[in-house]
Length: 113
Image 1 (cartoon, rainbow, N blue to C red):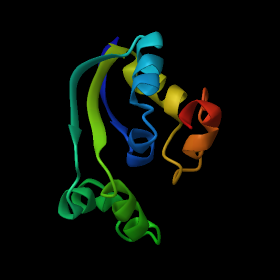
Image 2 (image 1 turned 90 degrees about the horizontal axis):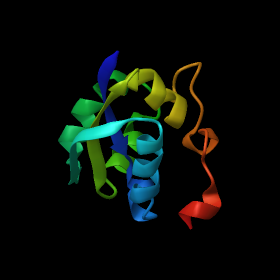
Image 3 (image 1 turned 45 degrees about the vertical axis):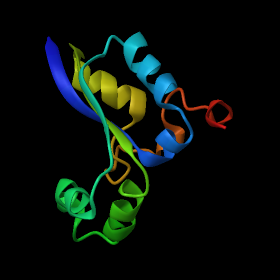
Image 4 (image 1 turned 90 degrees about the vertical axis):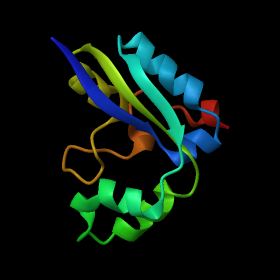
């Protein structure tokens, strides 16, 4: 079943010039971008986007991180796009099934230096 999902390449990956590597991983998994935009989150936009985490102790740090540099926002489409994306990138680390980005499948810090 063809689905769409939102994907954000976060500031640390943008700073490390890992955008191409990450998009290549999406492509190899059969996820095609139907919309893509590089942007800088404002503080109010980041606070609104992550409002679900507002009561959590990491909220301020998360917002500061997300406004620290540009991000690449994409809509990816493909068969089972949501589960494929989660398999590639890992679930939200704040959820029990989540894992930090450095533990995501395919993560290799040598490729990001």
